[in-house]
Image (tube, rainbow over all chains, first blue to last red; front, top):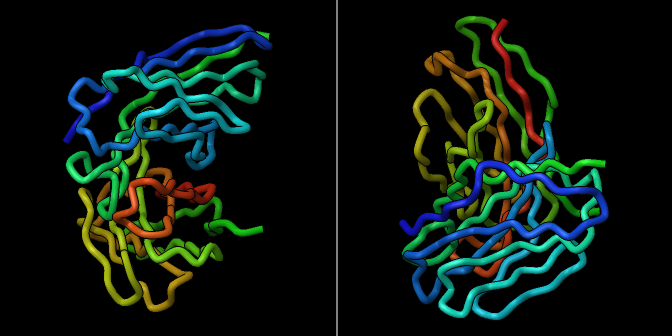
Amino acid sequence: DAKTTQPNSMESNEEEPVHLPCNHSTISGTDYIHWYRQLPSQGPEYVIHGLTSNVNNRMASLAIAEDRKSSTLILHRATLRDAAVYYCILRGLYSGGGADGLTFGKGTHLIIQP
Amino acid sequence: DGGITQSPKYLFRKEGQNVTLSCEQNLNHDAMYWYRQDPGQGLRLIYYSQIVNDFQKGDIAEGYSVSREKKESFPLTVTSAQKNPTAFYLCASSIGGFDYNQPQHFGDGTRLSIL
């Protein structure tokens, strides 16, 4: 299965943009890049996903490198409520994450300073 | 609002006792999943079901059992054979298991502890 690599933790200031990186150098051409986040004592929450093009939604933006070997989740203006663990997950025929469930690593612990 | 409801939020188990965790969804999703999360760790898959009356073992199914008699319900039983059941249990659902372009939706979890 293709794996993702994320920093263990990152720190940012409130009201500033946050860029969370994810490396996935063995991604296959049909793998989708999904991002979830998990607030303390809650279940994971879907954030955004994409295949090749950059994606935007009300929560965040996803920037995907041209060679697709890395991606960046962008929170445009961090708030204290964005403090969570962020997971980058590949889903596809060869990466799994389909009928047999998602594979969660340890993710990136995002700390927001007021 | 549509979503996934897990109950109870907290559960305590005595030695030798079976306990059942409830998971209900009103999203009309075909696929449902159970994950276990230990402190500071990612999620690990226990069981999954793609359709009513069918389910498959995940990575850590030993000591657990499930049923899928209704589309909206996927209860998990933690049996006395599970020697280390203390964990955070999460239920999820998705439209279909092989549609990689769709997200999974999670409940708020049940925290199980041993008395």
